[in-house]
Image 1 (spheres, rainbow, N blue to C red):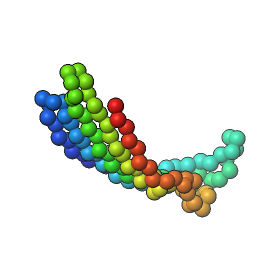
Image 2: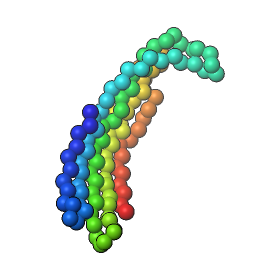
Image 3: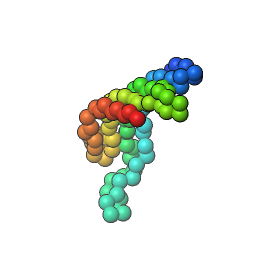
Length: 103
């Protein structure tokens, strides 16, 4: 799921928003092949996508001019792709990340 909240003061083009994306688990039907040759019977691959949280802002600094930016944390270390045919071991090994932008 995704949930968020925002606060605005339109007169000065101020907007601050906080957004949260939850971790999501998926189960996908999978056929594993190498060069088009099926190498394992049809199975299921479990996939976990990461949660993240972002704080974004903008504000007017002069007529027709905005300053904006955001900071985002993504919990990538929980991301996994685990094909059953590989014994459920994850194909991913990611580190958590912080991202920032300003403009």
